[in-house]
Amino acid sequence: MDATFVVFQLVMASIVHGALLIRGPNQNIMEGDSVTLECLYSDNAFNISRVRFESFSELLKMWRPVWPTSWCFYDLNVEQVDDKMVLHVPHVAHFAEGFFRCVSDDHTLSAPNNASKTLSFKVHYLGEVHLSREGFSNFIGLPQELRVQRGDDVVLKCSASSSEEPDYCWYKEGDDWILPSSVITLKKVSDMDSGVYTCTVEHPTALLEKMRNISLVVLPGLRNVSCRDLCWKATR
Ligand SMILES: *[C@@H]1O[C@H](CO)[C@@H](O)[C@H](O)[C@H]1NC(C)=O
Ligand SMILES: *[C@@H]1O[C@H](CO)[C@@H](O)[C@H](O)[C@H]1NC(C)=O
Ligand SMILES: *[C@@H]1O[C@H](CO)[C@@H](O)[C@H](O)[C@H]1NC(C)=O
Ligand SMILES: *[C@@H]1O[C@H](CO)[C@@H](O)[C@H](O)[C@H]1NC(C)=O
Image (cartoon, rainbow, N blue to C red):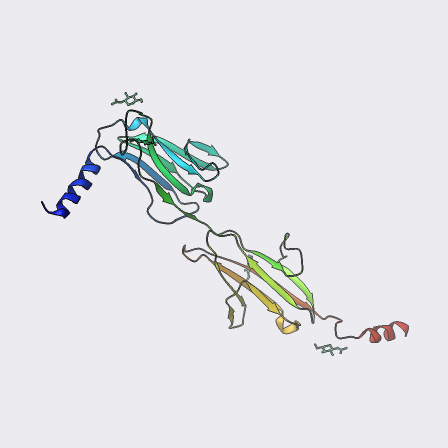
């Protein structure tokens, strides 16, 4: 008998004999997307109502049953639809990503009838854009309008939480340069540096982009007035 034919027969045998299968998204998904996973038998040899979903807990390093949940706008439901067990999440959250499998609680069954293969999916996200100024508290973030003295050095940093390191760039409204960096450094600012600066953040794989701008106002500072000038003015 031909060797390829034997392999083909074995594959067919393992699929046909009531194997427990899991189906789900086979691509990257975005936070907020709807996600559906299904457990089913390759034929109707066994009782699907005895099958449940499990997810792998990274914390406990073990498989845990998935229970229907509904809290804080997060819903997850599990129901039997005909000969399938269906897990549905209308708006998936980042924390839902991971490893899933289907398991039968019928202990008389053995592999591959008692458990499916493992399915994994990743949930991509891009958080809000946060701007901060170097040397200043970055906890509160920056106001919409930043006032600085003429002659100051201004270093602005742009950041966003993301499922993958995003691409950053800065540009200034009305100017034709684009700075491909999360940090923009303006040395000894003058009136010419006043204006609206925008940072855009782009997720590398998902089609996600967010931006934030800040209006820089350069005040006529006293930096180039020497101390002696001031003392001299004060004593007059
Ligand atoms: C499948 O199992 C459920 C409960 O485990 C039982 O109520 C149901 O009758 C079973 N169905 C069949 C076709 O055996
Ligand atoms: C399925 O059965 C096999 C024995 O064939 C056993 O080793 C395995 O632990 C079982 N899987 C689950 C998830 O119960
Ligand atoms: C800057 O951002 C604000 C609010 O996010 C928006 O209303 C405004 O149009 C933006 N300005 C420019 C010049 O992009
Ligand atoms: C300070 O510098 C500005 C230009 O940056 C200049 O116009 C102004 O005359 C200077 N003032 C003094 C007191 O030197």
